[in-house]
Amino acid sequence: MNIKLTAVALLSMMVAGQARAAILTDAEATFLEQLATAAAVLEQRCTGYEANGAGGVQLGARALGSPDAAMALINAFDAAIKAHDGNDYDPDKFRPEVSEAAGKTFKRVRSELIEDPERACAAYGDSGAAVGLLRRY
Image (cartoon, rainbow, N blue to C red; front, top):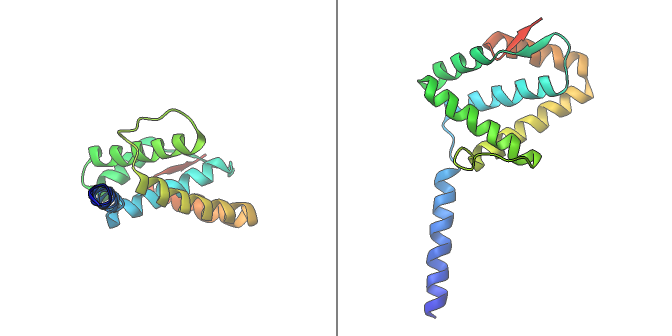
């Protein structure tokens, strides 16, 4: 009986910790969706677009309140990509909620980019350029 109570208490603490970790603010979710969408445009090699790193930090700083907050989310996104690809990543920067949300957005956008590349590249590429995450060349 004592072992069961200990196991239940441990499990409830883990679930509570995961529930706390699984929350993105609205601003984080929006910025992350923009990051994942821009990444999908670049991954699909949509002609005429390239990454705009400085623009991404500026957009994130406006959305999240500071360049440090923007870089923290960008680093969490980077760690999620590395973890998904099976590469080494900094576990201190990895956030499961970032990985999950970014993965969903990336898959959705990538699917549209594959299904109708001309339309989707123009739509998603232009929106990424409009917010400053991408540059036209």
